[in-house]
Length: 124
Image 1 (spheres, rainbow, N blue to C red):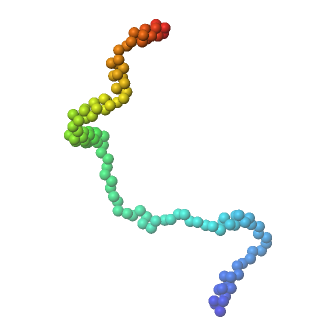
Image 2 (cartoon, one colour):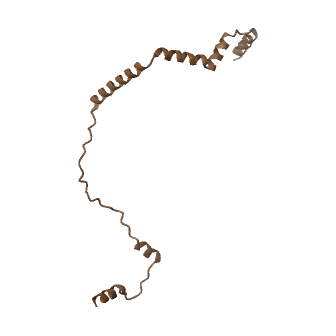
């Protein structure tokens, strides 16, 4: 008997007296409830990890300078400067613009070209 009574109470909702007017959009939106907040269980009770403190001004500058000197010494030890100079000279010789300029320098100026250049110079 108790089971039947409880089922009867649940299945028959109470009706309100009077007229109730509802907007279908509002009722659809109101029925969807999403809870986005999730509370963590640990509440921030982790092991505290200390980060190394940054060095202050002059000490940091001194360390940086020492490191830069050491790095520069290592790089210079690995470089053969004679090879570098030869490589630069080869590139200069192979460069077309340098070759053209040198060819123009070697070529003697013809009298007609010299006259023409002088006329342009005097006009301007």
